[in-house]
Length: 372
Image (tube, rainbow, N blue to C red; front, top):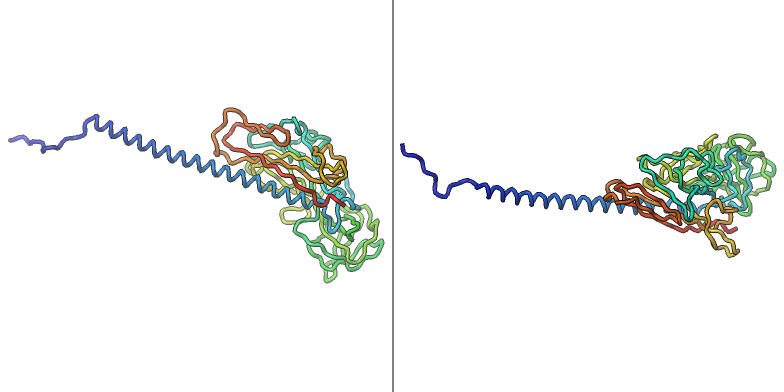
């Protein structure tokens, strides 16, 4: 037989050619992967920046709206308030003679320091970790090292109703419509010159609802009759106390919370021993510091800013400075070489080494109802 001959020009790849082809393929793949990784990192960084901006803005918006409304009670202010409530062992929820309140964390303030623990954060069980002691109702709620801001005002998103009939010394009065008022709510009656805070013990519904304010109950009224007189046309609104603080969020990280006398359904939840309902407002808010502007010169402007424990009377607070530290979700940045630090009104906050980015947000808010 005649042996077959190879076709002219027909041959396989040489080893050198194969290695060159593989090398070029690897270089191309590495380039594509580099672009993908770079794009993914850029997307995570951008998303992290957006999350921080949104979180910080939302937190300050909540706090700004609250402080601006502080002390507004129907058509009167907290400074001219009389209360017939039983303050009981924990006065925090029911002290409506001041528009604001607050608790200063030990070791913070100018020159102070606050470390942020890695998730999950742990709420503090010791009320002694705040100057003068944190109110007992907030034990195991607030993350250590953070200030607490308390705001008292007319219940949000409610309108006043008007008295149509009232007698001096009576334990009841008639209003034009029930509005949002309900049994057990705390409410204020005001003629714009004076006001009294009470608890609604019972309510007779109808075309002309009747509100009763008998003595007793929880917290209850100390007396059944008002210490001052009110006339037809006086306003009545529900009132609320809200404490804003840093607590443990649903994801285990720090978050801005509201500790509210009204639950998530808008119902009064002021039962003993803890009358508050915790509401998570903004996730990934890891720290908060608060300063209060006092009028020490009689000019009705803030001449100095102090911590909560240095405020002699919260009725004298003209404005409030608030600083919060907002964090991005994990994966928005490479871990830093050392733990990053942030300045919140002189308090050095040290964050853990992780893949989050962080930013401080500050605001100064005027207390509109501080001037009588």
